[in-house]
Image (cartoon, rainbow, N blue to C red; front, top):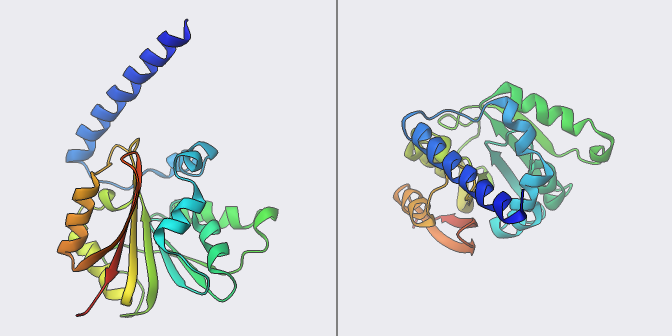
Length: 214
């Protein structure tokens, strides 16, 4: 097969996948199955959404108390934990115990033995196990669109963030749930957030929002 044919048929296959997947996801909202965790934590995934870009565009700084909402197998959790340092902490939250198990296994690997500031939690986005105004930053990577009642989840995130706390939402185009950034902005602003930063391109973007009680 010629390279041109490979690119052509590969492009057709991806297009068909995205169309079918988006149709299914339009009518059935459910968390990504745990077996997909192998892809979510793969090098290919990190090539599409590099961890350093997630950290930078989300506004994650040393010393912050951060929640990774919908952490999955911990694709970005360890990188964020290193970014916030020993004075910060990361709550890794997912609705599926199987995903949390994958994260905990990842933390046992020798290359992660220096990471001690990650606290895994199984929880629902509608009932986050945190007090009001307790977190500096919440980030979601290709997660918001998987949540059936997005406004309820966003209001809950608003509740647990400190005043002037940050919500960072990252999306990438191969995801069948991918929304235009105008859609993400509208949803978050309806929940009371104010746009603070707009980064990336149509294939891979991060919108940074601020909670303000004023």
